[in-house]
Image 1 (cartoon, rainbow, N blue to C red):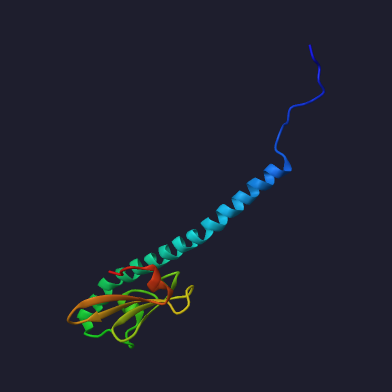
Image 2 (cartoon, rainbow, N blue to C red; image 1 turned 30 degrees about the horizontal axis):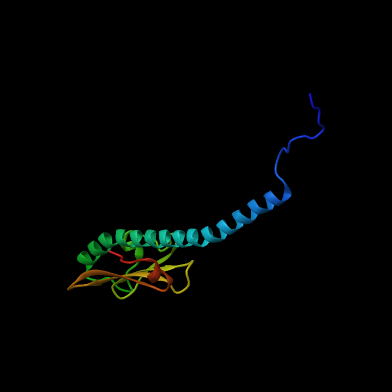
Length: 134
């Protein structure tokens, strides 16, 4: 029988660990921007859903009073200006506007027209993240 003092390797060498850390770093540098874009798209989609839910109460208010303008208070149609965590909601010139607090110069705007009904538009960074509102 041959007795050897050589022990088989148990664990990883420093080089192997450094390679694994480098691979994880490269993968995260690729995945993080994709994840951030996904989060932005989800937030804009949530804002669009919030705004679409406001169409019915705003239309009822308009049908009852015949106006939806700067003098209309949001509480008159049953919402609060800070009801969305993504930004503030306001009314101006027959428009419901959600202005994002997170994305500069971005907003979702619902406009009421007597001839075509409600139309939706996105501006700023939100316009690049949403394909359609209604």
